[in-house]
Image (cartoon, rainbow, N blue to C red; front, side, top):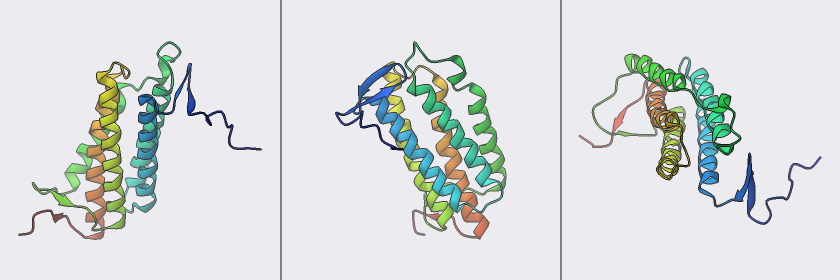
Length: 180
């Protein structure tokens, strides 16, 4: 069985309900979200702090729901593929729970004290890039669900606090960006 179709050889791909160029901004966002979930997967594979892996897996599954929502044209998208506000609330609750356990300095932190923390910091930066693409599409009227932007904005905060939890679990950091 072949794993390629060759249908994209001319620079086009399918959204659910439309054939578009691979340079379409919606495809750019889907690619950025795909990179985000892969980067989170790398962080999850390295994570050793209690519960981090489970939390990251839930976030990855939420990203797949967002990708499914965005892969449909508005006319064909079933309501079940629309990210609900409850997923943003879940992120906020996770961030609050972690913030109670992890001390955060009031200054910028230099990533890289642990492998797991560094991987999650990379995932955070990739998530921020996906968020910037989503902002462009939201402003252009192509992402209509406000929960998508809210989720992506909170996701980077979750990844930041999980990276600090990884560092703390090993007894490292946080190292501050400004040397004292």
